[in-house]
Amino acid sequence: MDLDLARQLAIQNDTKILLAVIDGLGGLPHPETARSELEAADTPHLDRLAAESACGLTIPVAHGVTPGSGPGHLALFGYDPLRYTVGRGVLEALGIDFDLQPEDVAARGNFCTLDQQGRIIDRRAGRIATEQTAALCDELRTIELSGAQLFVEPVREHRFVVVLRGDGLSDQLAETDPQREGVPPLEAKALSPEGEATAELVREFVSAARKRLEGRQPANGLMLRGFAKQPQMPCFPEVFSLRAGAIAAYPMYRGLAKLAGMTVLETGSTFEEEIATLQAHWDAFDFLFLHYKAADAAGEDGDFERKMAALEAFDKSLPALQELGADVLMIAGDHSTPALVAGHSWHPVPFLLSSKLSRADDCDAFNERACLRGGFGTFPAVEVMPLAMAHAGRFAKYGA
Image (spheres, rainbow, N blue to C red):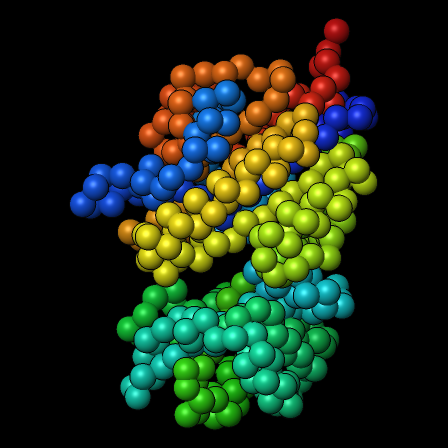
């Protein structure tokens, strides 16, 4: 979707759009049952809604490309993820309301567990409590660097943010997270000559941090990824002429919404609290984005049964979402996170759109196999917002 065209076609009315994103929604068949997490889960509300809706499968970035959560969500918001790239560090920083300056370089950090040989044995340090991460960040932020001001801020569980502030900093840095276990964290390296000085600062920080973390089980190591400066992006509410609100417990997704110009609403840490926030603010917005994390976390841990349970928990919450009476209700995923892979994957993601103006199709359940029969087919996730706008009667006719 061309955002200039969307801005040209967008009109205002009193219809409401709800986009509920089940993070890591898609899966793969279990080798013993040949059924995916969605197929094996008991999801009567989702299945019933799918049978009454228009369905399909979305491709977050491109065929065969495994997306991060940033590109996956930006596509659902209507931004071409190949054109609008955002580093993970920026999203985490914005998500915790850090006052990020234009020339700051931010990176997402993970505390991890290292064995005696310095190899990673747990990339998430057992998902330590946020309070433990906060205490470790208190210590790490006392590190002094020779050429920049250092900020180290806790995010949630094992996640934290590192921000460098100074003159001439570059975000042209390779990640120190190898994205797998059994190997040591990588050394910070520059991706271009202008990044070398900043890479040296990162190496200085990592060296000092490792000394302070030594013996701190399970968080005795760290990894950094998503080095970035804050980009400039078209404002979602202006492009689509919508009063847009966002509800997410996890900071990164709050950061994504904030970067897009949405109003990020304060909410609690559970999905039940997110729904209560949605209900409380329903009348104030034309468009609301609601984020559900549990399915992705279970998939990343390789826990098939827990992902099934997370999908079933969302299904139980669906009637509360339907009761709000959205003119367009969409259930989508930012990417697939099969338990079989224990990580993100490139597989297309189930999608449904419920509206009085939608055409029911041959999809009779909400899962990967059934959505293959959906009327939308397999299509780019960046087209989700144009479909929502059309079904909400918020796009004018194009041309004479």
